[in-house]
Amino acid sequence: MSVLKKQIPYTFKDPSLLDTRSFIGGEWVSSSSNKTFPAYDPEDDALAAEITDLTRPEIHNAISTAHTAFQTYRHVPPRQRRFMLRAWSDAIKAHASDLAAICTLELGKPFTESLGTVAYAVSFLDWFETLTEHVRGESIVANRADNRIVTVREPQGVVAAVTPWNSPVAMITRKVGAAIAAGNTVVVKPAPETPLCAIALAKLFERCGFPSGVLNVVTCSAETTAECGAEMCENRLVRHLSFTGSTAVGMWLHSECAKTLKRTSMELGGNAPFIVFEDADVEKAVEGLITSKFRSSGQTCVCANRVLVHESVIEAFSKQLLKRIPETLVAGSVWDKKTSFGPLYSSKGVAKVKRHFEDALKQGATLLTGGLEDEKGRGPNFIPPTALRVSANLTSKTSDLAFSSEETFGPMVALIPFKTEEEAIRYANETNAGLASYFYTKDASRQWRVAEALESGMVGVQVGLVSACEQPFGGIKQSGIGREGGSTPLEEYTEIKSITFGV
Ligand SMILES: NC(=O)c1ccc[n+]([C@@H]2O[C@H](COP(=O)([O-])OP(=O)(O)OC[C@H]3O[C@@H](n4cnc5c(N)ncnc54)[C@H](O)[C@@H]3O)[C@@H](O)[C@H]2O)c1
Ligand SMILES: O=CCCC(=O)O
Image (cartoon, rainbow, N blue to C red; front, side, top):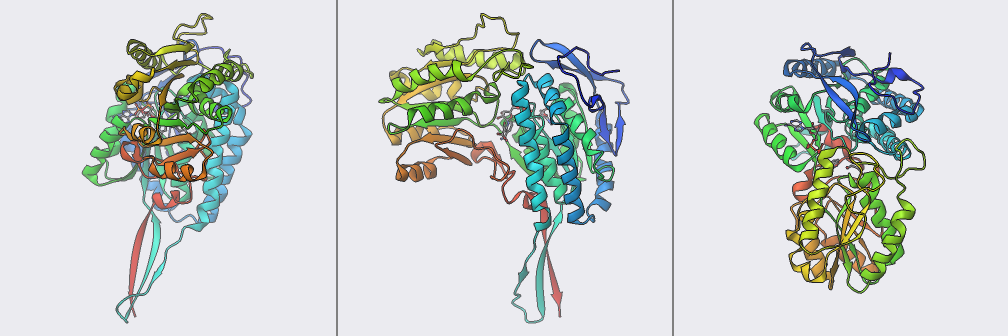
């Protein structure tokens, strides 16, 4: 019998991927309290499934189990780890359609976009697989003639991974893939809004030859999340806490982890500037903005959030944007393969966009297209792609606008005119966030100058997408600590041990 509480227009090739239990030590477990929590379909807010709601002692048990598994898994040779990672990647590819359907169901992401998300998630496993056999130490010439010094890189132990709803497949493969490639064991806590993707990933993982306890998935409701987080931070067996989510929660977890001096990786919120200079190719810049701003209906941490357009090209830019929005962003049922634009994940997301929209209008912005009302009635969480323009005389105080000081995390964009490069850079950097920035100019020296001046961990020059497994992903300032992907992720999940020999 299906665990789904509603009918969806998709037939699963492998219905066993759908489960509502947690995965600990190779066993599928329900909470001893028998409590469950609801997961909803954002397209209509209908109940999708009832998920097991673990208690703190059960999280404690998952960590102990992962620690026991680490004692043997740490000695599994890298090539064998590589082959198991390959098997997991192949299993996900073989079940990509089912996984995409689960992502569509619990996140409201259009099915075609969900397929892209699964491919992006798999790319991390493929990338880490290539790095598995390249963990290296070094040999150091000692200053004492009777000493020899070498370093080795060792896995850290139990990694606790806490992941967000907005990227329920890739944020798990990005963390778990790197951690287990390096020889660690992991306890993952997915967001309560999107537990089914994490569970399905574990279902595939268990078929790939990994020893029991290497991956554990613990599901918790929003209410029990705080005690689950406290256990992960306070338990001394957890050696690394890897978090992706909001800056506020990340800061709290980071400070709690300080009490047991854990390593932390923090991938936090952004507030990306997107700058269009006077010499930009306007059509190209508009395509970049649509990709950056509207993918996932504006719900990614690297989405453009503050769009600065030089005053000499803002008319042409607005015109092109208004032409391309309806041509590119096709709204409809999330199950229709032609749909490229879906609802937000919940009423919480809708309320935030609404607040930013109303604040911008109150402060004098004009509406170019969209607005919060959806005359076609496409569900409770649907907001049409919306564009506003901030008037020139607001530029000096744009940082007071709500959409400018916080991530909107939704499909609303406000164009802000500017006059000089200095003014644009000053405004772009006027935020505590420093995750991604984007700009468009054809001038090669300006490309270098502005890329170096922008305060963010990732810069897109003439591109609206900066996410790739081979690229270091992460932020500076209050957007995070550490990098995921790129050539260093196994270093992030290993410790250096120096060994001195007396000869
Ligand atoms: N930098 C990145 O790579 C990246 C990627 C995706 C999302 N994000 C950010 O994530 C945010 C959106 O996600 P969100 O609203 O789910 O963020 P959130 O911080 O509310 O939740 C993220 C995760 O943390 C958990 N959590 C919340 N409180 C906790 C606690 N006290 N202890 C332990 N876990 C706790 C949640 O259940 C969820 O699993 C945005 O700010 C976005 O920019 C960043
Ligand atoms: O939401 C942030 C992560 C999405 C990405 O990796 O591009």
